[in-house]
Image (cartoon, rainbow, N blue to C red; front, side):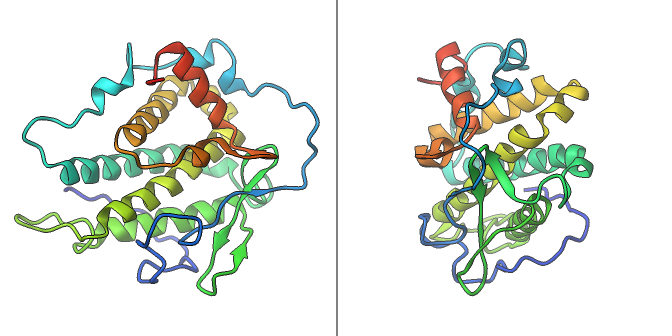
Length: 247
């Protein structure tokens, strides 16, 4: 598995060697469930990513299920691991495009909906609200360190994946989903300005199709909870109606 590097980021309060990393994937481990913010619950304006023609913009014709199928003779764990690596690289590239617009002033919280802020659980197991660029930097640092760890993502011949690899991958998937959800919520205008919506939509549809195929997320991660919906949950439903994703 060929690995790419990132610029030296700030150190995460939950390091890759923390016992909470790679544990069971649930709300008691790793990073917290989304928290409802104090924002107004008034009727919100329809987000641009749900509006035509942007919602239809993509690079792949037909249903994304066909491109996430496990190839014949390819080990399932290896297939999932390689795809998670590729997803990380692509999410990192897209965030790099909008990073100058994601500041502690423009994005003081890690928001992914009008009433939704994600919180980070630090080494003392406290829920901490962080500015979006800080939260994302911590996530990308943590994932990069996992990818660089030969004991987690083996690259050598006959290398063995750890027994908790499935749980670790689900945890990684959940965090990258949050990064994508924040970009849609806070920075889709920048994506449109660069005329990159077909590429970004295709990445996200591919990501959702892959996660659904291999059960890497719980539906509540995508839809949120009462009073704190995830914005992209509506995109998931819309794409299912359109036949882009499996219903």
